[in-house]
Length: 248
Ligand SMILES: Nc1ncnc2c1ncn2[C@@H]1O[C@H](COP(=O)(O)OP(=O)(O)OP(=O)(O)O)[C@@H](O)[C@H]1O
Ligand SMILES: [Mg+2]
Image (cartoon, rainbow, N blue to C red):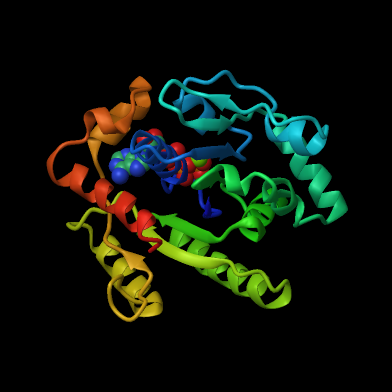
């Protein structure tokens, strides 16, 4: 399946989830390709892969995609600042189907193609959603991030209806949740009211992932989160992997 991870709001955990899912699924023996669509190239960096024009070579220069295979078996299409140029090319051509076309022939080679998007509703994000079977929306329980969820859900509906693409909302994954914060609780309640709680009649709001120092430490030290997570936090992140495996 092609799983696109997106929210226009920055810092909601898109890259952390993309990398956590890709590494876990690859460790479980699945064939996984992680596509870094963000010119910040945080996913590429997190996996200690050299920053290089990935999507640019593929879509911008129409060359063979420079896919890097890690020791773990995980495959990554790395990125760098040139990714932004692809965005400009696709925007000027209005080509929202570019990623869909590019990935079509590759879909059979992988169980999971996971796409990490930039924090914007750029053409690249739109093209990644157009290409997706499923979209996962990480959000922090704060106003702007929740507004980003709404915009994405509307965009998904538009792509399904106008473009006749079978893109589905896999889940809304609340992240950095602090249950002692009133605003967090209120936003969780609002999201559940709007999109339903996971496990009930197709509800899409997944159980929250709490704010955790271990995750901040992992990214600061460039270590895989699976090495550092313990106890309840580990269980929450394992739950995320399980929900993706079950397709929601
Ligand atoms: N549950 C969590 N607890 C604590 N820190 C977290 C958690 N999830 C993510 N972070 C940290 O928050 C920061 C932003 O996370 P991440 O880079 O995954 O977000 P992003 O949505 O990809 O950001 P951007 O929009 O810039 O691409 C990182 O430093 C990450 O380690
Ligand atoms: Mg990111």
